[in-house]
Length: 311
Image (cartoon, rainbow, N blue to C red; front, side):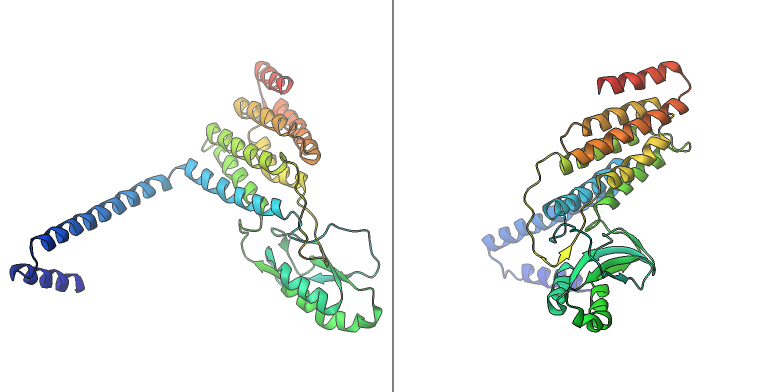
């Protein structure tokens, strides 16, 4: 083994007095530093292993990944493209050839092909969409009818290749996926086999932080990098459906979860964003209806109503 040879060589050098006193001391200090580094690495590894089994560590990791994805999307709400314009005639739909989840869109490639073939592109499916061969990825059109044949044969294939479809959803370009994962963690915690209301409440807190940061600040002017591509923004309604529907359903019969959910939704309703406000109030009403149907005691129903009035 290389380490055994090195140890033997070092032993021979020391026994033959090759190193002087200062060199021996330096070698001793270096050896202590190596041992300290090894022990520190081992302790950190043990701590990491111990944390892997904690549900709060998982929640924090998912929240951080979702926050990063939301921040990237907030900086480019339309992925660098332009807003959806009025309807055009002569749309040509672009379908995917694969079955899976849309993981990302190569916007730079779309812009390059749009300029090359003198076309405009409207993105119809955002990352996270489940794609099948009948699913429209984008619509393409050109005001120049003379390039219709080229558009059909060449440009559509190039546009299709810019939509990357895979087997699994990813966090990077799909902020809604993180909201779904957090919601699933809370839903599993509320199952009869686990019955962990505390975890569900922690997830609700994470969702409030994420959605408040998404809609709580004034929207900054969006930089347009791809002027030939129209891209829709994320729908607040869809985001709230991903985040709270399962929790409201599975936690309707747990009074502490129902109360925290009402407080969370009413807090989101006052952050100023109109779309988030409407979605939050609608989900609060649905959660109230579920809770009233699921809670057995009138006192618990009153507690939920009190939380609504205070909110």
